[in-house]
Length: 418
Image (cartoon, rainbow, N blue to C red; front, side, top):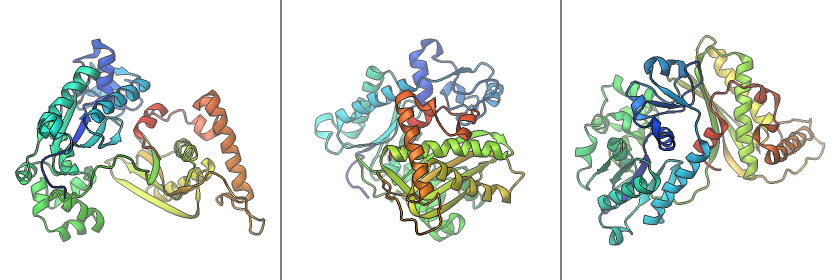
């Protein structure tokens, strides 16, 4: 565990996308705002705090959001502005310390142990950051400070909206014990419900429960990690640059029984996004994982590991479709609310070495005749899109899948680099 003062900061912009819209249009300030969706349908991408007070949340259908908040204003979103303003905030953070670990467009960890001689104690540094972001960028930001990354992130959540919370060393248990267990990094709605079944509702409850009991409930790896987090046992350091171990994309949708054509269109769209990002970085992956989320927030995952890494759109689509179908065949009447694809086990793959014609052709083998043909088609599409735009060309199921609710620009902001 890191030692010393509360020198790990977690800085998190408040209701970022909605706050940007309110910044760009002063008429929206103080009013409930939803980015994306609409009263007739679509998916809400983000909501302002004024809208959240009515129960509006990201991932919710626009029709439901409008029912919860009749005076809700829907906006389309200014995606280039999100990137510009998010980068401006990161520049402020890097003026304080070079030890900045950006984990999304709107949040980052900082190690300010080397900056205290310039800016004062961590609480003064956090206040300085908040003032500069407000004055120079015009956005509210919450900051948590603690000895560990996990605790700093919890502190920033407690600080919201637009606040500052510092957890002094030695007072971690006093701070953590009464907080809801859902604030622990990695506890989602399903895990929270399982823990509640054992009477574990606060972080203190989780810390007092034997590790073996938690592991039996949610699995060894996850259970041990959650138990360690409840004890603030988090040795992770700030990582200023890293190469991601996986790349993925997901699509939320209104709860509905899965139609095969709709499922294929969504998966084709997601596979195309993932494969393009892999190829842009000269990467490919061996393990394809899909996630299907059902109404009620229950999720099922399936994975397949291939002998060789792949980064072709059609291959990823076919593998993902088989995996998703294996899930849906077991629950044909369940309503689906999200589909996701990720590729891991990454390796460099800038060129494909054609195979000798000694085995039966298999399009899932990158070097086979059909495999190299698929990669050639992908390359042609990539060049057309680079010149004429993302929507200028593509595979038919993905192009016809116009019901995919979340704009590609928003996905690109949310997804991590490879």
